[in-house]
Image (cartoon, rainbow, N blue to C red; front, side):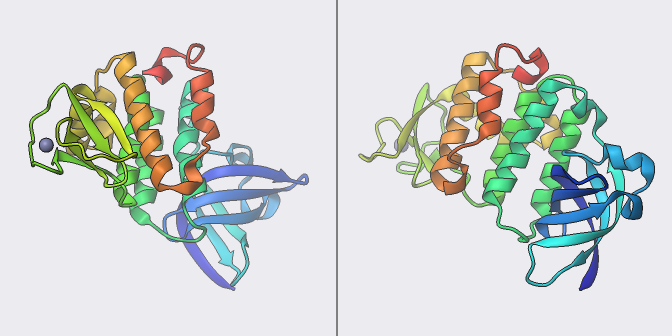
Length: 261
Ligand SMILES: [Zn+2]
């Protein structure tokens, strides 16, 4: 058994008896891992209760070769993301990137840039009070870039036109854009408005911590969410059903305004 140290975000935490927890973590060095931790032995008393889904930790653990469950030796709580836990809207939004990573990423397949993106997303939700939905859209967009499925939207794939027209066509399987007149016959086509195109080009230019600043209407937001989801589902089989997104949709009218925008 090798001992390792890594930063991690808790994707899921489940009590195991009175004194143990099984954590599903996204770690910086090892990707997604499952870990058994014992309260009295591995964690300071005060931190035990705060060690829950959506918290950020530093951990030392025994890696068991060819086993899917590893043993925590020491877990130090770095950020419990209190403001996320105190807001239903923030909690529901934070569960979206966690579910995408859980469903789409192979176990123990490290991607430090994805870890950093997840941590920035959590910090954005923790520290900002408006435009929160745009932080999640930016996560999804940058996730598609990290996994190589992001469509190229800077020009028409057919004629090279870079201008933003009122309407374009998104070529889902080719991962690109076409003017209406240039769109080749095929099934995997989606209409995309000039405003949605402008939003995605803006997302390409900015850092995640500025993504909350976008001012977009509810109608445009729905179009953007539909395009992002359709594109991710088409290219990543395991993202067909995202219960966190369904929950956001079903709560759309009851969530606080900060989580809707
Ligand atoms: Zn064209």
